[in-house]
Image (cartoon, rainbow, N blue to C red; front, top):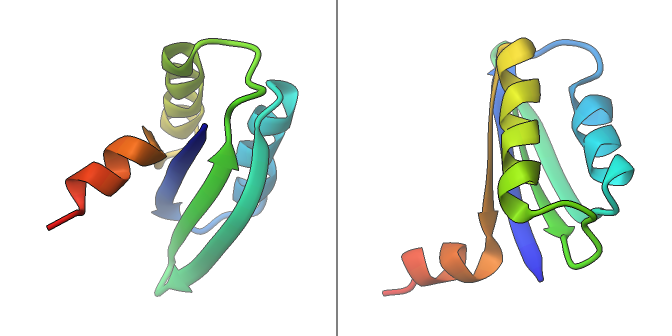
Length: 89
């Protein structure tokens, strides 16, 4: 199962490392990453394989959100199937 992870916030050192560490700690494999800096805003989209995740999707989502709140970031994760359904005409 795949998921889309988005991260937005003021650019600081270690954002990619922090999010990817959480993924690695729970068996989530990051398969693709795109990121850019727009003015001082860090914007990243990750595709991740969550089939090996050792915690529930809900707990993993909460963990990413908590990390985001502690670091002034907005982090969302969405199952790829839901993402595709929402963006299909």
